[in-house]
Length: 303
Image 1 (tube, rainbow, N blue to C red):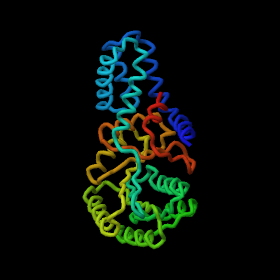
Image 2 (spheres, rainbow, N blue to C red; image 1 turned 90 degrees about the vertical axis):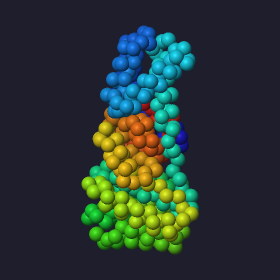
Image 3 (tube, rainbow, N blue to C red; image 1 turned 90 degrees about the horizontal axis):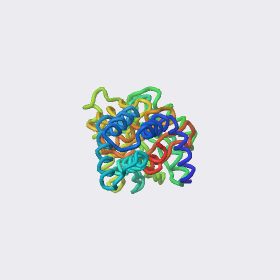
Image 4 (tube, rainbow, N blue to C red; image 1 turned 45 degrees about the vertical axis):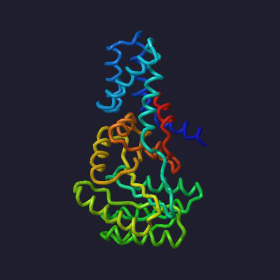
């Protein structure tokens, strides 16, 4: 199972590897010794691969420490040291999804077009394959097609969905979703929310209201708030993580469309700058191409 994940990840990250690992390798080939010029070139290569300026500078500073501590002298020894630093950054934040209580609650937020509905459907499929009973809550009542799209996924995966009409109060949808999940003995409730951020206060108020309902109705259940980001948007995804982070208590990231981009380095920037763990990555269009995140395997696949 893990090897299959590694293979999929490697395949999905091919474009990122070409822009990231290969760039670093081409820099390391030119330099025979470790000096300031090498550090400058490596930093530039990291920035170009969407690791972000702040994170790239941090990686180089950590690299200098490792070079000193381990008495590295050859440029080709640097490669493994960088891989190690990246794995450390990605491991710092919790990537394990919390599913305690019955039902455990997963709220999903994110702007339209990032693959939010698809991610919910694939997540439901993954949990169902693990033998869990899943219910979907259609809390994005703001967008006309959102419930219809989620219903298509519910039917495809073979799970129940709770929905109200367009424009309904998301809090009421959450209440009914929890009631249904309790009555039907569901293990996991995945709740979609409206993906708008142009009014941060509205989003905050809406989420607060939903949190209150969860805390009142399911005091023993774990509550994950997952932000879905599109990897193809690169630095824009980092900006979204910052903005949503100010409005919501995000517990993890779902990074979609990694297979379609060379900007997978953004995972490192989000981990380092936002201190939020990546919980799932999308590495293809298939229903089983949303995978639980593994930091070491990800760092490995970049090189």
